Length: 502
Image (cartoon, rainbow, N blue to C red; front, side, top):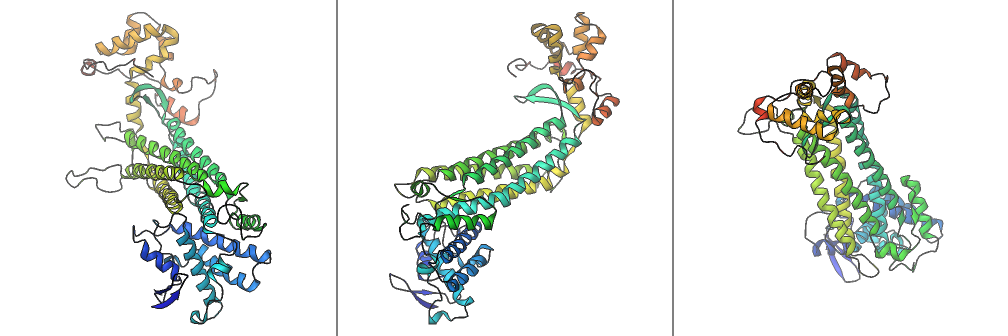
């Protein structure tokens, strides 16, 4: 142990620690969760300290030698080194002052080592006067929050969503020729192709990526330069703009000085907006995962239209059972994210006067959400979606047994007559064809054309539009032939609100 001194007095600090007295006090004061600040946030804080030092050198407020040492040490932190030197718990002072001080002390001690000096003879740079020059925790921590979350959205979540969308689009192409029954309210509806269904999932994820991009833009205004309450006391008037320029160069993200520093420090509305983006992404991924496990349910007593990759035994008591574990993982990630973003929204309401004092918790929740969503989406794409298989025969059988093909008869018979046809077919165990022909409502050739399920999946295609290759295969395999309707056993079951909604 070594003795360090701060404004309160002497503190014993482990010899190997790069932090100093103030950090050691925080470690002792906040033994709460055992979770330090997110590594991505610490990397972002390193970038902010690097940019601040470079700006102060450019503006003539810091010597080139000190600036070089601070930037080199901060660069190491931004690169993910020295993570163990940031032990302060998430549940700490609400401004994040302990983490800002932690960074100042680590950078000062590391800069001293880089200078070849001995710490016992004094630090080469001062944690407050040099590393924290022109800054306050009240503007630095919000700035690091925006920078780190924007970088994580761009580098982590965005690419994961693109990969998932690519995988879903590939399956949409693979499944383009498989006609199946649609379902609304979990009840039979009109036909579509499995490829069309998957195109909807792919579009959901593409839109999720677009939302993430808008989230990055929402974080582009930075609080740096406002110092304690937004007035900019003790900083150079060009400091904020210079820091923003340097951060933009370092990250490739167009950061700018907040036009109103009082809003930038008192409110965390931009973070709440990003939380909303993450909630939407979580909802999309959860919906897709739930749909896939429904479509793969079975293998004999469910929908069984899809076959999920077999990842692991699903039961300790039922031999041969395989569960949709990757879908369940994705659902749990979505639920977890929803809880985290609700916390961020609550934190956004908790700001008082010139400062929101929940900054460390907001940082934890946003970074945890981004990390889990990104990891979940990557694993889901690689280990679930990429290995999906369709049971075309099962899709075909379920589709042709559906009474909702009667929808295509509405233009020919009218809604009320078509409804009576479906009810009669269901009640008496007959096919739609048998009822229509038996009642002489249409001739056989017109009925055959109207009840072509493949045509129902492309109703707006102009006459004579050529089939796609996948559709040609389906046509050649008899995909337009209507199979028998459910037999007497099904016909005797109770009619369940067949016309009670779309």
